[in-house]
Length: 207
Length: 201
Image: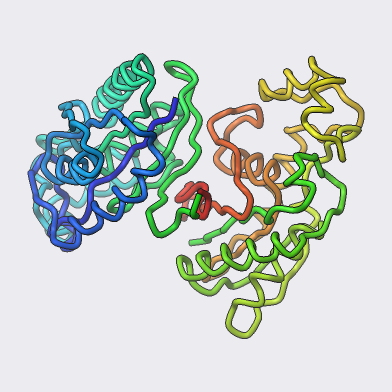
């Protein structure tokens, strides 16, 4: 079965380079447009009745609705697809981060986890993302549908590493850009292939 | 930071007939050339002018590379490197998948499982992965992206080698004609897969 993992469209904090994490920041006008453009391209690739699920954070949910509303299909939500929480680093500039927590920033860049209050570590994000995606894929498969899951940069990246059984420390797979997606084939739980990564409406060929 | 764009050649008449090429040197026809030009335009718009274009010496790749070169400013020259040639399919070259299924069902089943089938002349996955991987690593150090024009199996196996996965791994899917993937190498020497299968349907 086929699974699409889509990152939300642009938000104001994306533009300013601020980490959002669990902060619930809305899409910009451009972000809404990006969601529509992505939905148009996705709608011809996900079969007639995709199973659509989104992180409950509005930037993901609204991006999902661009597809759901276009196709007349319900959008479900699941807490397990939320973005990684960045705790006290949410909403501050990279400079403020470096000045306030120099050692922790180094650790974050080398190992991917940061020992700061409220930071959700890799292994927690990975286990909830994999569990959520495998469960929704089970349901989609049982119903003969393609799964389209809308989420966020960091959690999708971590989720992909988990599904493909890749070591997280090396950041083997890069982040998705706004309104970009990955496409996978699942043969069964734990047995996945990455068919497309970080593609957008502008970079897919006409079928 | 090195950026490599791994581009699969466009469709040939043999591809359209479902015939394996491997080391057979089938040229691009008009349709293939048109596909290369259309895909090449999107590639350049997306990633900008490449520093270099390095191609497998086989005609289907080389012609695709020349189509891309013709679109660049000033005509970035096409270099060739046998490291990026396709794996050999041995005695299966020139045959269709139906013919292979009929006469070698067990070996085809092995191939489908991701194993090397026991047929004469088959280019083993581990060897191809190492050859292509070494070729890709040798391209590090340019300021602008380097486009490598190669073949489906070679690209997939070379990428697995760069990201430290076994050549038998099934985590990377089929590479469509005229599609491309992008890897970057960071300071630590690790390779990151930034895009896979751009320009595909």
